[in-house]
Length: 234
Image (tube, rainbow, N blue to C red):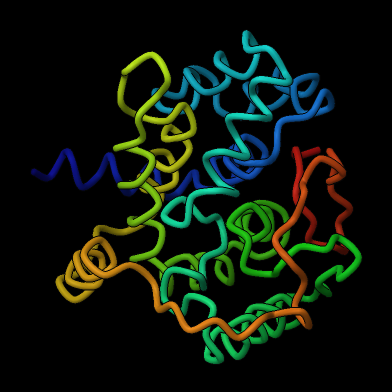
C-alpha cells in the first residue's frame, strides 16, 4: 500500500515530460509528428503506456493513422479531446467555461492564439501549458475536468478496432496522464458514472465565437514559448 502511493507520487512528480509527450502523441498525426517521435520517446524512455503508442505511430501508414484519428476523436462524441464538452456539451454554460480556460492561460503569462482555430480547452493545449509554462495552472484545469478525462479514458478503453480487438492505440496516452493525477474522489467517480449513463448535455447553441472543431492537419509541429498551440515538444 505504502509502496504504491510512493510510486504514484513519484510519477506525478515527473509530470512535465509525460504531459509533453502526451500532448504530442494525442495530436493529429502528421509527417512532422512522425519525424519527431525519437525526441518524444527520449522524454519518456521505455514508458509502459506511451512506448506502444510511439511504436504504433512509427510503424503505421500515415494516411491510415490520420483516418483512424479522425474516426476516433472527431467523429465520436465520447472521445472528444475538448475538456469542457464532457461537463457542458454544446450548451450556453460551455461558453463561460471556455472563457475561464483563456483567463487561466492569461494568468499563467500567455495568450491563447486564436489563429489556431482551436478551442482553449483542447487536452493537448492544456498539457502543453503544463509541460512548458505553468504546471500548477495546468494541473488545476486537468483536475477540475477529471471526470471528463476519465470518460475519455473509458471510451478509448472500450474502442473496437477493425481487427476485432478492443482498446484504442491512443489509450496509452490517457493511462499515462491518469498516472500523473490524483485518484478520483467519490463525487468525481459519481460524475463519471453519470457521464457514462447519460452523456454530455445536448442543448445545441453554436460556439462560433470560440472556434469550430479543428481539422488539425495544419497544426504546427513545434510550440513557441509565448503561445499555447498543439503539437510536438521542443
